[in-house]
Amino acid sequence: MKLSIINGSPRKRTSNSTKILNWIISGLDKTEYDEIEYIAEVKKQDEILDKCKKSDSLLFCFPLYVDSMPAQQKLFFEKMEKYKMDFKGKTISFIIHSGFPEMIQSESLKEYLEMFSTDIMEMNCLGVAIIGGSEALQMAPDQMFSRQINELQSVIRSIEDQTKFPLDINIKINKRDKLTGFQRFIFKINPLKNFYWIYRASKHPFKVNLKDRPY
Ligand SMILES: Cc1cc2nc3c(=O)[nH]c(=O)nc-3n(C[C@H](O)[C@H](O)[C@H](O)COP(=O)(O)O)c2cc1C
Image 1 (cartoon, rainbow, N blue to C red):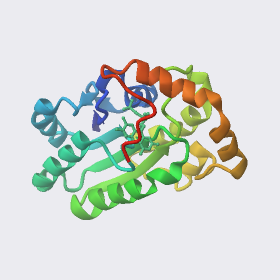
Image 2: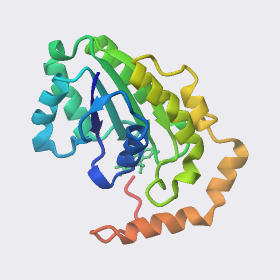
Image 3: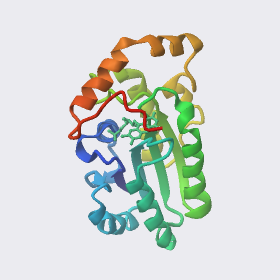
């Protein structure tokens, strides 16, 4: 079985998506796969699309962007749709992840991906795994994500055996779909959260004024 592994993050190689995909790759032993493809390199999308047409199965990993997906990812899906007949019957799986911890945010994207792959593309969707709270992945040690890594073992098994993801996979990865009232309270008052955003803003090439309110 030949698997194409596609990273849809605009951050490409340095993305949290790469880190998640490497967790998956480290568990694959009976699947043939090429190196991760980065579709944010938009000029390479047609070449990547041709490689995908030759695979038996596709795995996508990308972050939640404004409750949906990065534009480059959407562009790639639109290109796939044009060659629907080349993908019909193949298997497809998704791992989507969000900066904020509540997985409920990603539920409508999950529904869209199931509908896109099954109804529009007539592919066999093995599942959509959701990982909440991925923002700190790059900075934190893997031990902090041991539950997620453990639960992703069943995603790896599904991809290897070409079977559906377990129905309860997302509750197992995230524990719950929303924060509890107490967790929301702690999140609101947590001073570290502002420290983190100020740190990210300081790395931005443009001058960012955190007091700006564009909406
Ligand atoms: C433009 C933009 C929009 C985002 N929108 C959301 C969002 O709606 N919900 C959320 O939880 N995180 C959102 N995030 C955070 C990303 O999902 C999060 O940082 C993710 O870990 C990035 O993964 P990557 O490094 O693979 O790109 C957004 C980030 C950016 C840059």
